[in-house]
Length: 144
Image (cartoon, rainbow, N blue to C red; front, side, top):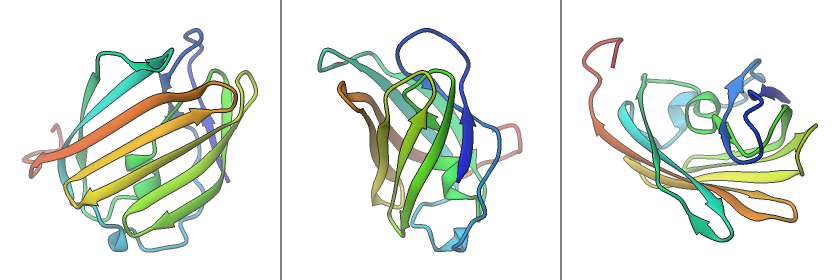
């Protein structure tokens, strides 16, 4: 089980901060995503419509843990716990239980080693987050 906490920024979708990681049961190297510089676009969904993307750049190292690299976002306030984590070579899926928000489920699906889409669905609210990641290039320095 992974403990997650989020800053209190009001109702909506927020970027999550990982506070502790669960033991990894599979080798990170078997996950089907390429290391390198990734452009991640997170869109908040309100009333069934996705908003403008928030763009984040992230350098993924060789052998990086997929859970902390590609599953580091959630739709909630307060403390959340990720449970029922399911990992395959091209996807991650998990459930979220949060103190100040309804239960949610999330997933990330890779259609290639350089592209993924994902979403978060909150109980009683439907889809609340859409995410898309594209690998752009190799990382050239630790500051990438």
